[in-house]
Length: 178
Image 1 (cartoon, rainbow, N blue to C red):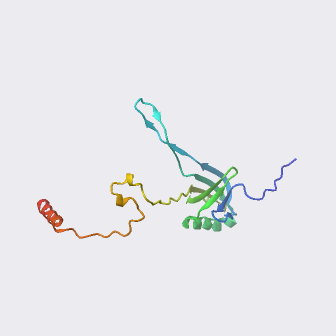
Image 2: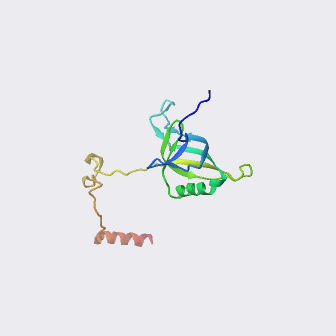
Image 3: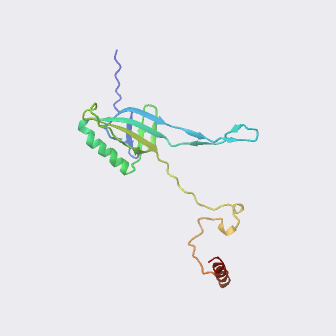
């Protein structure tokens, strides 16, 4: 008995990062490779042993080998190029997981006799992480000058002219070294 699936959506797909509509429908993913790694800090202590106390999640990298048939080659390639040029965030859906906020980092392509009019695009995507700076008041114990405790109440800073004794000191030093 043959197994038939009513599942119509592709198992591997590139989706729009906001609407989750499938992009590049004519592209046929042939192979997907996901690289999800951590860097573990290592340091040597006095007795010579190696210790770790922190782990950093690296950016997720996804490689998708795509085949595009002859009749769709130019259009699909242009769609990939436009998404890359626009820094369009996409979600990559695989059989086992989905990877959001991915950005196309490489899109070379191969045109060979063996492929006929089709093209092969070994697409590379990297996770995009936006860093939002945080501002606010520091506790007074963390700063030497209590007036500098708040980074948000600093306002506009204006320079002032140096007073006469400071100007004279600068002139004397200038004369010594020049």
